[in-house]
Length: 60
Image (tube, rainbow, N blue to C red; front, top):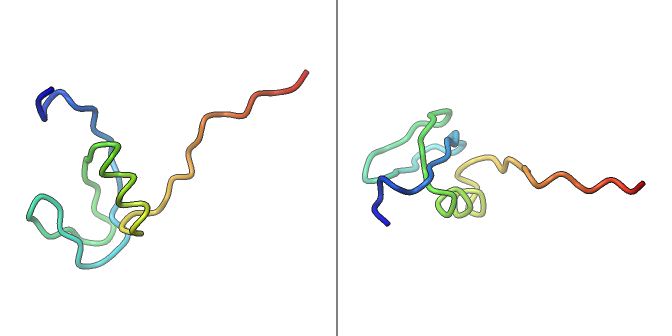
């Protein structure tokens, strides 16, 4: 799978001084990253966690 075939998601940088792909990013800047990169960025508080999870099943 090539880099262009990977699914990218948009995130918003939430920390000053972050670089991505060798380029400085400003707080509030939107960039596109892979889901794996997004998870790393959430873990290291580079972006705000979206908290998006699959909807819970309703009992009925």
